[in-house]
Amino acid sequence: MVRSRRDKIRMTTAIAHPNIALVKYWGKQNKTLNHPASPSVSITLDSLTTTTKVATSTETRLVLNGKRIEDLKVANFLDLFRQQFGLPPVSVETDNNFPTGAGLASSASGFAALVTALSEHFQLGLNLSTLSEWARRGSASSARSIYGGFVTLQGPDWRADQLAKESHWELEICIIVTNEGPKKISSTTGMKSSEATSPFYLEWIKTADSDFEIAKKAIVERDFMKLSEVAEQNCLKMHSVIHTSQPAISYWAPGTVSAMEQVREIRNAGTPAFFTMDAGPQVKVIYPRQCRAIIQKSLEELKNVRLIWASIGPGAHLV
Ligand code: ADP
Ligand code: DP6
Image 1: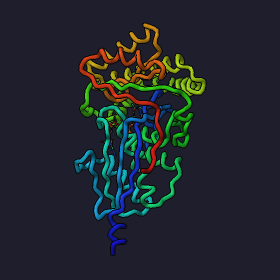
Image 2: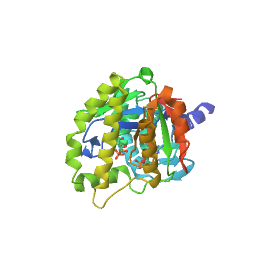
Image 3: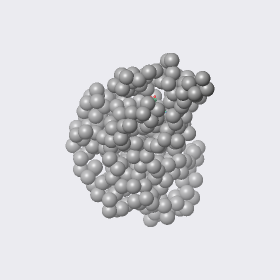
Image 4: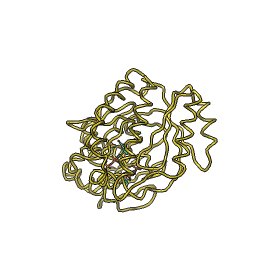
């Protein structure tokens, strides 16, 4: 009796971290399989965390940050996953320790933690590559959060791979949170609009392979200058595509521009650092660990922002 009750309430917990793309994808080549239109390379963060608990249940339900919600993206994913493996309904309780839907890649850590917990809970024995495939079906950037360190996502199979471990290069990240609220246009919707309407979309896709190769080489060779140049320009190209969508989209806030300027000033004064932004107003500053004190002093001058500090972190794992 005790045993069956315990089985019924057995929960499996997994943790995953968001990742920041240094060369980004923005656009899909296959919407059913959720294949990006171009390759990307990212770093996984350590201090930002999604913790997800799954349990077998009588109905499929999602509790996100303490609130029961209906989320189409998660619901569709759970239907697909359960159908594929013939699974019963599941209860999912998940918490992000950072703003959700605000351009800090909660979808990436969210689906990576979910597939890791599901695979263990139902003893599916999925390897990392297959977990990455499933995470991508939930949200393409999530494929990369299965791995720690420096991670690539490219065709033809669109499963992520680890390019280098966390310890390969002592880089750190400061996230300048300029607006904690959720974005008005999701990444999925925003990129669909850019594909269809931005006059720069095809140009963006044309230079993607070359940006990807340059960034990979810079990471392998620990060439900070090269990585700075390609990552910052890649980010600005993506936002140009976004800004020139019709109707125009902007994920930036006034604080985004001030933060970008502050990073340029840091660099002009001789400290290596670069910025990148995803589909949200937060500015992520990447710098070599030994420069932390100077970076901190300078970024603390910014008004009306919250700073979140991170190092390069591990892949999704069970608790
Ligand atoms: P972000 O920039 O944070 O990735 P998106 O709008 O791209 O924002 O993604 C937000 C979506 O990601 C949510 O609507 C939900 O579908 C999913 N998501 C966020 N957090 C979690 C989580 N902890 N577990 C599962 N899915 C999550
Ligand atoms: C700007 O992977 O979140 O962060 O697959 O539709 O969920 P969906 O989109 P998502 O978009 C990520 C966009 C980006 C760039 C990147 O992470 O490469």
